[in-house]
Image (tube, rainbow, N blue to C red; front, side, top):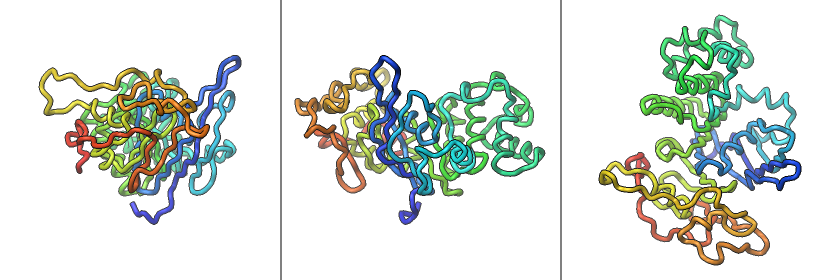
Length: 346
């Protein structure tokens, strides 16, 4: 990636709030900012419920209008998409912006054959004839590792395994070689062999086509092998940002250190216990009251539970290319568990 290239996607102070009558509003995403340039891969990492998927849906303009408030800025090629009309978003989605959704069963139409769902993307955005689109759909399904792709085109989603449905979604997302691809847990339902194949496909797309890739995952092995920069999220906010190698070698946020320490090591003794993060994501406190991770943090002190000048714990520079949201970071962390095994040193 050339550092001189302008970002394809710029997200600034993005916030998403869900409201229901008679209930307190829920702030699922709270001031998220990042950018991604052509040929760059960034990772959004964190536990379930931290706001990763909601962030991706807000970027794509796929959140419902009713009961949802989206503020901040999402600029694609310099054009803000937050208040863009539906016809503009429809023209971008599938062509210039692609997305691999987390749940393939609910993302595919159960009443329409797989072939129709793949070819409609090609017919809409690549101006192909039906015969050309059919041939291209076969090629795409074969490329993502679906056996006997010609026959699979005629089948319905319920006739495919979970892994095959996920690969069909990936084929649809890659059909138009989008300039921006958001992949939300794209390898969750895949076995190890197919997972490696899909990650190699994504890597080729980034290198050969210059696609900007946003990888949303909780799999640190995927992050170590694919991402250039990593943004760690917790309770709707980014709490640490760093280059992949630097993050794995020197985590500063105790939450990041906990995520890395919980990765199983190949050289661990048989039966050796893992080192989990205590508590659960539900134990978070509002950011307006201090650090949301404080109730689970072994480094927490009294000032972690207080606000500063009426504002939340800030995200501040922490060395070259790093940002950190923490008052008592890890000072001298050792190389994290699993870093070498997952290829962070490459």
